[in-house]
Image (cartoon, rainbow, N blue to C red; front, side, top):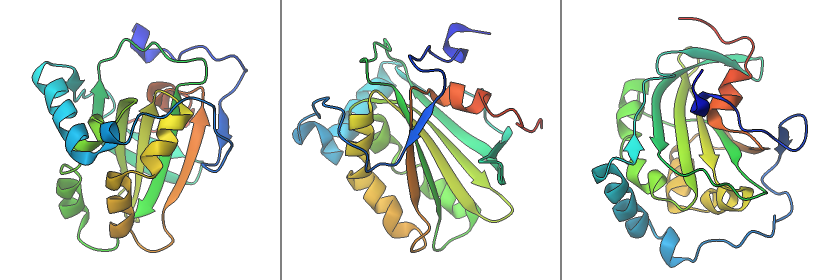
Length: 195
């Protein structure tokens, strides 16, 4: 198992799930200019051009039982190469779950390519996994962020608001898992389903 497949150590024994309305961590947020969509786009484009933005195949086409109630299959994995010098309050995983209001699964997979550079260039981004329950059309995004504060900034971002507008009303749920990595979160799924 490679070093980046291992979950980083945590100060407490288990992941701690918290709603997005929990108290601020005290970590200063990036300035508004740095969070503008056009700035995020160009920063991510630079990451891509210099080889710091990758699309590993590691989890793609594998299925996992999430929250012990649904099977989701990974169809895309994006990772930004970082030094991973996390602050004492990070990293965190943001779990976003929803149903799209219209279009087929195939069309929505293609449309999900559009905001990739807006996500990858957002301050504090590390990784994202796109998943779908092919039986009922529910979508799930797993994001790894530098800190809880930047995950909460992303909740208010243009790109997440855009996704929310395309979702069925009332179908969007968000939660933060403290002290977790995307890889660690999936590895913790003891009931992962082999393809």
